[in-house]
Amino acid sequence: MAKFFKKALSGEVLEIYGDGTQTRDFIYIDDLIQAILLSANSHKNIGGEIFQIATFKETTVNEIAQKIKEIVENNTGKRVKIIYTKPRIGDVKRNYSDISKAKRLLGYEPKYNLEKGLLKTFEYFYKKFFKN
Image (tube, rainbow, N blue to C red; front, side, top):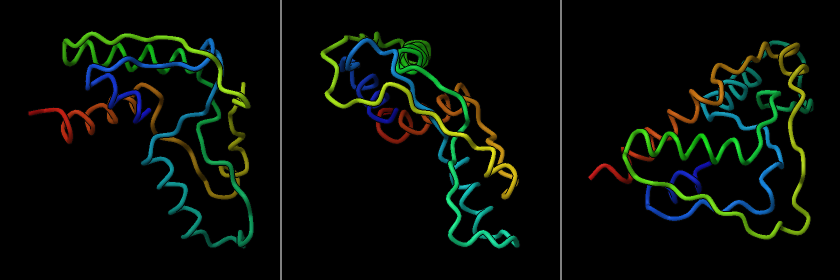
């Protein structure tokens, strides 16, 4: 997402490898930090446990690119172009995480949905790098 935001805000093309139907489970940084703090402060015996920390929701690369395009265009007036190129060899088609163990043992629950996380990410990049 960072790469897409930087490119969109710089007026560069967003490049999607393949057809964009590959999925990922995107997580906002504050939710990841929350999970780390929950694990560090847990009173349960969780040493050595492995947790999947995410949102348990698949989102296509097409959906992410389109949402980033809309956010940048609506908030800056800049036009964002999306192109499709050859798929990358070995690219994972589907990727999402089962967070039930983290919910059960840590009390982890993501606080940011995709839209809220994308808006906060946009605000960060826009203020830090492009609001001059």
